[in-house]
Length: 286
Ligand SMILES: [Zn+2]
Ligand SMILES: [Zn+2]
Image (tube, rainbow, N blue to C red):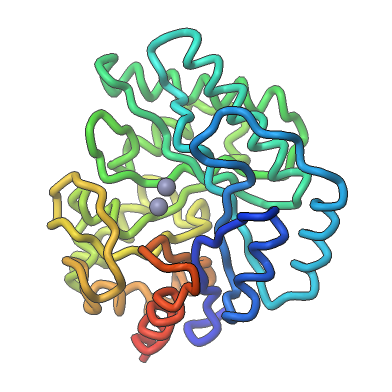
């Protein structure tokens, strides 16, 4: 994988079934996609049907899509304070790992959690414990638990590389841990990826603190809010505060050329905005 053949795509709807995401993404020449394997705003989900699993796998195999990740439900909080909610979150997370495993999806992307008023230190401990419980219940699974960097909005954990390091350190099966950089989130969290020199320092820090080998996906979103704003608002590529300058740094960084890059920017049903954003990203490659 080099700069010119980076895997690029967008979050794609699974309305009508998981295999429908392939039908939608392949004609648009996406080579990487993110999906929800269930309704992301509901706790319960019916098990995936055999026919749908097979359809997803066979369509994927004959498509141009080389990389699929799943994003977990927004309801899950792996450091919820109330015992019942924590239990519910852990079970839902395990269910999502199972869905990924059945579909052959290699990563389950998730936001670490919101500690509310428990403090970051305890929040981090509870998240790691949740991951240990989940991994124990899914022994031998290939799917990784992918920590998504957050903007640090509210009491969200995961807005520093150090948070991720601590979570990973407390997880027993560390080989199952990967990390996703959401560009809008880390920018809002205060990591200046816009200026070339600063960008290089950010990536060096990532490597020193987390290790570049754990970086397995990018969410490519420009930010409606300023550097360090701690507010999570996605904008089209080049239209926000990161700007084309920031995305040029990433698209021309050979060290991360092999890491799939997936848009989570606003779009209509036809996904024309995704096509436009991918075109813009490709054109930044020198
Ligand atoms: Zn996310
Ligand atoms: Zn994201």
